[in-house]
Length: 74
Image 1 (spheres, rainbow, N blue to C red):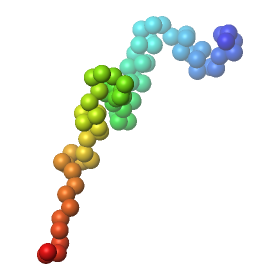
Image 2 (cartoon, one colour):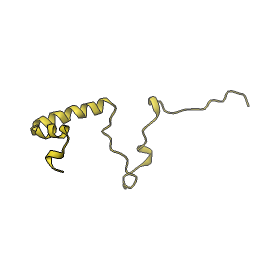
Image 3 (cartoon, rainbow, N blue to C red):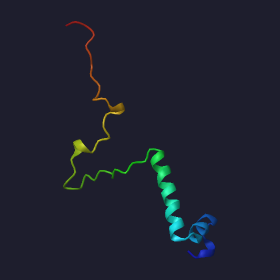
Image 4 (cartoon, rainbow, N blue to C red):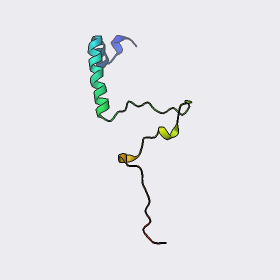
């Protein structure tokens, strides 16, 4: 692809200096984290260090899990 075929957004990005691109990338990354993005890598089940128990997202709302209560006498 040649420069003339690029979208205006890409042309604006390429016109920035490296330090300006770095600052813009910091803003984009801050927005990513603010929207709930994670720095945790995706689990790799093919890795020899993969432990399925540790790769879960964890219980919802920070609670240890659900427990069924019996309501009737046996």
